Length: 248
Image (cartoon, rainbow, N blue to C red; front, side, top):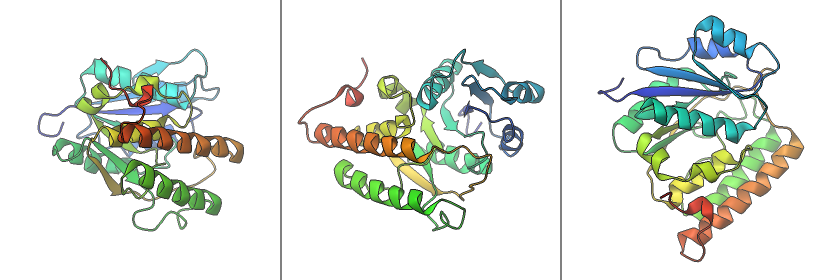
């Protein structure tokens, strides 16, 4: 806990058997109250590793997708009564020890959402991010900042912390079950005037780290542009798509 705020780490897992343990061991267990792994029908030893470590598990009977995995993560976190929810990828691409700093930024009441930026600090390329991904990141981020009226360093990181209030206020259940889920949720937070903060995180690209291929990246890019356009329309009251309507 931090100042009596319950902190929960959710880990959306798919084929994370080689990296789950080191990710779990690097978490700040002194402040994290609950950890949950949601396995999206992995065909490796992810489940047995989680069981060996004693990590609570929620299993999908079939592969539903990265976004669907997060929907389960956040639904379970809300049921669990968590005040601060931090998503940590179990592929060890993001530094788990920064959970403390991200949770503290939420606990302060200054921010409703915190993202771990690979761009702040300038270490993305040095950390192994492919050049084409870096260029796409910068171009898409510039377009999104323009359309959504924000000034974030990046929109495409998978390292995020949320307040319970934010997750209870946004219609993320309507989001994609695929990779664009992250981008939709961030756009929803911005359009609905939640305070979004950033923290610099080191980048680690290696064989076991999860990554989408070029064709899926192209599809993701078009999804990002579509989300940004809908966010622009909602922002100016022209048209409010279901993604940007607050739940009842």
